[in-house]
Length: 476
Image (cartoon, rainbow, N blue to C red; front, side, top):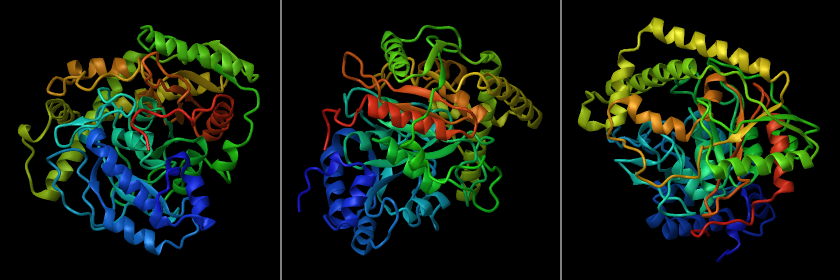
């Protein structure tokens, strides 16, 4: 049967319909497939389709998880599914099917989510826009000429267009929050160690990378974190204890919070006027809800942070590429990669063990400074990007000098990598749209281990300024 209201429900809402037998899981799968076929020629959000698997899972769906029977998409980075390739947006990675599921994938499946395929990513997830040479650019449902963000850009576009209510995303420098911001969605980066990267990895880049989802509602984000949070045997990190239910916490008032906000990036550059408008409007909303709001930012030595982050990032990329080379019996060549990837790989191969350790020494010192600031302030408020979503083609991925290639990218995404370095949780919420109708995500940073306060505040803001009825041109 046709289910025209499909995209008006979030994931938990669709699961409730399945539980009540008002619709079957297979009917939801067919609705999602129809929307992929309708929207994907324009959006290029889905790069690999697993329709047969999804239909089989839909027919046999008998689970009782919170998302039982709900259509879903895995990201083409770390979204490892048995029998399905994961190419990380790079032609260097062969389209070989995985022999197993990632622990994360198993947890998504145990929650009842049914994957229909893999979503578009930039090469190795290095940049906050999704324009790989392998897959081509993903396009923003709000304006097809603009970026979806990255690296979870395909997931962001698919959720924003109403194809699926939530989709897999991960974040090593902002890659959950950037696409959530660009597509008008909710995106939470959890605390370091909150989710597992096993069995294939212990960590990536010293723990910079975190798993999660992009979604249209706070409650879906909270319920997804309930489903995937927790360590597996052998994981190198253990996050602070989690509450009994993040979903329940997201529906609990946050109390009176003290919020510091930023109007300049970490180099002292003013943000775009639309971002300033988003911060001002959100600050007034927070004050009306009883929170204390004032201009204040953590004491972050940006030159030290930037100088420490890049060698860790580069050496992590080198580890991944050299590891793939060993597994595939291939030798990396320059023509296998985009220029910026190749340049960063060359830098990464030159990083010494002593330099790597010194970088983490500096980042850990910065994390202690930030933690001290959070003894006074519960939340740090800014915007995810320094401007509304840029047009595709803005950045030069053929530039082989990482310092030159990444300079405009860092200016565009100025705040998010800090939380990957410090391990803090952070969430972006769709609280503002530009005069041109493009989403401008508002970014909230919490204390280490304290997703609870972020989700409580997010739930309050969602009620105070609902966004569920705002839809892009390319929708449902």
